[in-house]
Length: 67
Image (cartoon, rainbow, N blue to C red; front, side, top):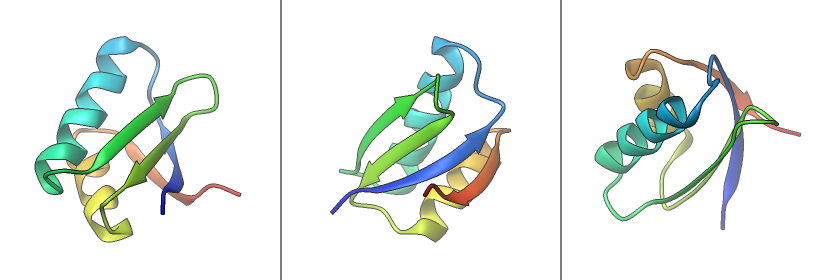
């Protein structure tokens, strides 16, 4: 099951790539989809704690679960 989280600070393809790579490194095998327009990331195969650590570690702001 995929979960969607808010991520502040993403503005370009490079940002999306950085967030994706950070999450994949924290949770190998995870599926990651970034939506720049909505400022969200949808992840399957990673815990919220893994996503939060990866997002913050990549220099972006984890905003919790998206409604």
